[in-house]
Length: 286
Picture 1 (cartoon, rainbow, N blue to C red):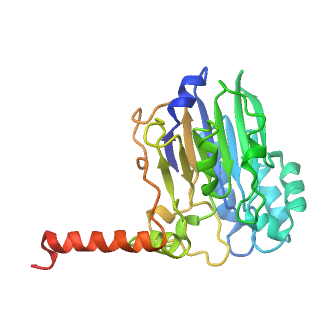
Picture 2: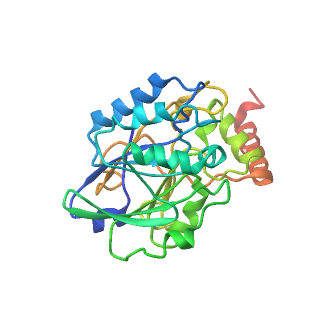
């Protein structure tokens, strides 16, 4: 369980605090034990959130385990809103969407929904999967109303940059699994250096809206698509909780915001500068 505050914009527009739980990358199937899915749902319910957000990749490589998806999600005791991921499109988006809706999930496809939660309105912008070319931010934000507390959902975190420009101060995402092996910064080197990902795991941007227009949270998720191995704190299966209405600094968080990761050659240069500074600091002499 990782716990974070929301953004300043959300705190200023909410009438009262809301607790949000974030689940992503369930990947139901043979790679991820069903017990892990049920443990995640149990953790969500124990936190008693006002709303649960789901950010894609519910299946793995087939539609054979949709009954397990339904069995897990039907146990969630709070309203659910979600978007689709690349594996959902690869396997069959219409069938995955029907399974989600059958379990009580409101699936957003490049659209904005305003829900009433606890007597107040929350605006949710849901972007379809960018990995498979289905994301359309401009279409998703066309009905966004100013002045409402707003949060964004996107399986691929890179859509956050465009959402920030439309006043979405906090975006929840998944997709990366934090590389699944986050030891010695291997996940950053692999995902940023080879995969071109600027957002690997955790909070990026600025929830105060100063250095960046907004923030994005990239969850390590629950399941796996190929190997179930997870090593390192940042790669552990997780449920993230967001206390919307609270401000950064109101309580201890797992970590503070990070800057986007350099990618490709920029990453290689940054790593070289890091090692050179360490050598200058005495490693070479020692």
